[in-house]
Picture 1: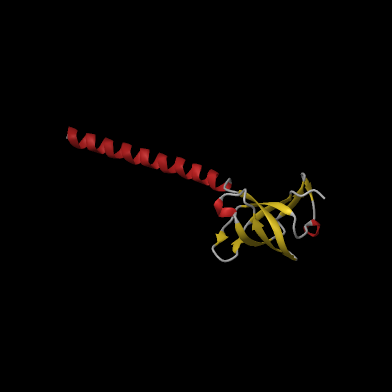
Picture 2 (picture 1 turned 45 degrees about the vertical axis):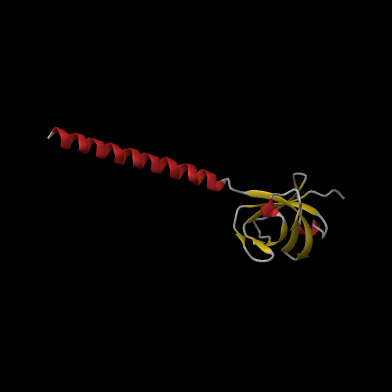
Length: 124
């Protein structure tokens, strides 16, 4: 009887520890997922309305070099020195930073989904 009571207490304790670990782990994962936005630097090579083609700069990590395309949406912010600008203020040859929180499709050129912010880095 004593042995079965110990096994029962050990089992219940294990279940409680496992459940608490899952709850804490889920909370941490959810917070990290919201902060997974990435930023890289690029030069604009083509603009067609809200569709952009860019070339990643050599200062980026290896995953953000090369050719990329993306579409801006109504939620995409366009900024220059902390001030909002219009998409029409961007020109071919401008250096920009691209902040996205989405997926990169492994196509050529790479297609970026979920672009949140485009910041103009060039001075004119």
